[in-house]
Image 1: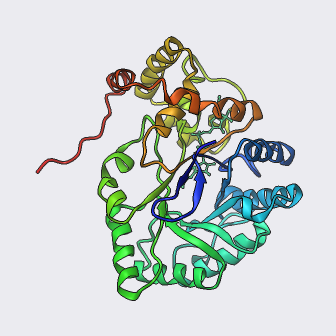
Image 2 (image 1 turned 120 degrees about the vertical axis):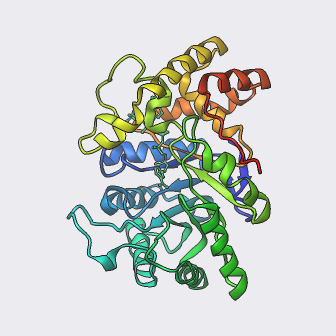
Length: 331
Ligand code: NDP
């Protein structure tokens, strides 16, 4: 496993990490969840990603049980949660005070995540989306206070604009508060703008770290949807029709079919090519993997071996297939 500093922080995060969206407490049983986390940890993964909203809070409960059962030293792993959407506990419907980035919900959501995960502090705490109803100043103070209280070590954002992240830094600087250390954006061969263009300046100015999500575009970049719809996959889960429609756009499938042929020519697999392509970007601190089966994780950990196959020539061929390289604005 390779490790990298998370942005400007001193925290060394494994370049492949593991998250539980749509799997823990939902698609997979608790025994599989434990097998997946154990496999990840044994392969050097030190960061486990979670959020209050995943399976309405149940995902954190499952992860918390595994952390307790495994008995791993608390100083050997990083665990995160995220606040914004609220955790409905499967009951459906949240009242306004149970969501957002206001001082009340940030404080209560953190306490609830600590309980569900059965830990004394969160290593990373993310604002899961920007909250247009709450001044950024209130959120920065709330996060800073959690750090002062010892409940959180580093805070960050997810899917915030560069402008919003810089506003948080401006406020932190003005009041001598601790600003955000990392952002969690989607990044994969099909979704590139934020990581490659929008944040390009702030990697340098504020030392932004990135913990990127959906490296396989929810499985589309494995090539398994190239020739039809296999059983027992994420995009078949009831209620995720919105994700299925977006992910399986014909334009995406056409690209993945061509990329799959390239992967074969290189002597590798489509999932490994897609993950290695993310790892090759030096502004990516860690690639958060998702998996519903241990065999998937076993395969995906081999991605480091594929990075060296991504020569300039191969990267150019990938660009020719993708035809989606985001442009830097020219003035
Ligand atoms: P991916 O895009 O990598 O999708 C993972 C899924 O792809 C697996 O669950 C599995 O689904 C399939 N898969 C993985 N490896 C293979 C393989 N080798 N062969 C075949 N199929 C494979 O990642 P996720 O979308 O799961 O995102 C990763 C993490 O990022 C999440 O767990 C979460 O922690 C975080 N995240 C954060 C978000 C945010 O807003 N901040 C949003 C979304 C995710 P299947 O069951 O179909 O086989």
